[in-house]
Image (cartoon, rainbow, N blue to C red; front, top):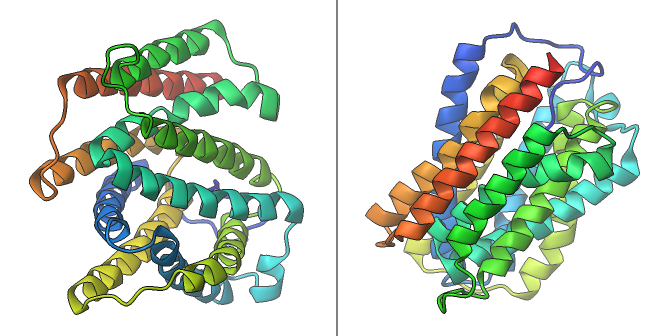
Length: 299
């Protein structure tokens, strides 16, 4: 989700403490959402599950856009329609890839790899956005890469090719995040949210309907919970970025890894390998340093 831009006429007072609290709650919601996604996608087709999520997400986007202070037509008007279209395509594909990684690899392992996203963003911010990346952040990226190798364990006979699915998902989300940062200079957060939701629902709906499967009553209830958590999580994320500085709350996104790992062990019966725990600590530590360094440079 992009940071507020000048296009928005409504600005809330900055409250970083409240923003941190809301971000922690949002990461818990997203972790619960990922657990439900893994369960449902393990039983039903991932495209169908993603399509149903997007139906609710698109409905929320239309509702929030209609209530925006600028009016519906003015809010959906984008200064970068091609990039917004690319963002929408990229995000819906990334969600399908990451949910598949949850099923193939497990929630803990997939999230441990996905934790490298901020480091990938830092590495790609130079060639994509033209931002300068100094030696300190390149050092953090290198250390994070070592953490990734610890998690993936190549050359020790236990490397899973499914891990590459999570790696691709992390890279896709990094590019999506950089595009979001770029369009934020022109379009407001509600405009970006509307475009990414509508483009995604248009793409995934026919694919999801083609792979439709009948759900059991219990799984239909889980699907309803997934839709509610998805809508609530995105709405809260919008609120977080409207009341707090992005550089302050960004490091707390790593809590999703913590919450997802706890839920995976308690509910799904997954086991965290020692190498995964060590590698995750290295990746998270390097990522937090890179984020704090970027915040320092921006100041």
